[in-house]
Amino acid sequence: MKSRILLFVAMLLLAGKAYAQYEPTTTWPYLYQDFTAGELQPLNSAARQGMFNIHIPHGCLHFIDGEMIRELSAAEVFSAKIGNDFYLCAGGRLMRVLAQSGNVYVLENSDVDMNQLNSTGGAYGSSSTTLATTALSSFENTVSGAAATNHMQLKSSKDDGKILPIVSKKYILFPGRLVYAAKKDVMEIDGLEQSMTAAFLKEQKIKWKEDASLLKLGVFLNDKLNGK
Image 1 (tube, one colour):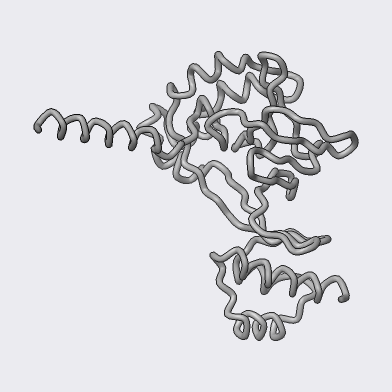
Image 2 (cartoon, rainbow, N blue to C red):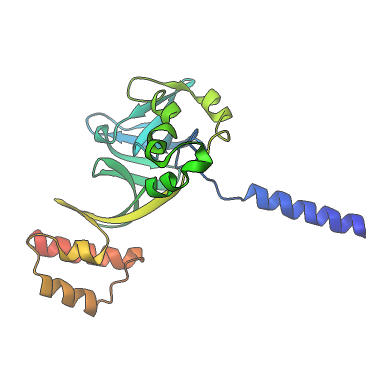
């Protein structure tokens, strides 16, 4: 009986470890735990299949080329599908599409929380003033533009770095505008009548953390600013 209990506990521990949430590190600063099959749609060429990942600090696409990891800047990419996730280039970064209605999108941008990273300077053996540049220095020097690094070598060191704190922010994208999804930013949009916007927010009970609600707001903003 005791052995069965111990076996059950061991299975629970293994299951918990298997489903532990992935956390990017300074030696593997990627949005995904590994490179994932997907499709790239460049700006000026045909779509192509490949193995892709999002480099969080750069906000750009990395892909496997033979045994090497290479980089495409966000400016070279129109869109990318990684696994079941879809990304668009907006504001110079690749952002994940959370909701869409026509040419209106709710996007999520993931980036390194530099304030939190700097606040843990002692844990990294660096002062807060130098941490931002030293924590990612190894990666900045290996994968950039035409430069490349070996995929398996980098993957083997993914657990050697420190955990990167990630902050995610939502944006509303529609033709001619990329707006941070916060009431203050929406109310300050040029060319938008504040009283009308305030009335819409109140009447529709816009919830700033809900994608469907933000999409409804995006459609309203697009209609008012693009003459519909």
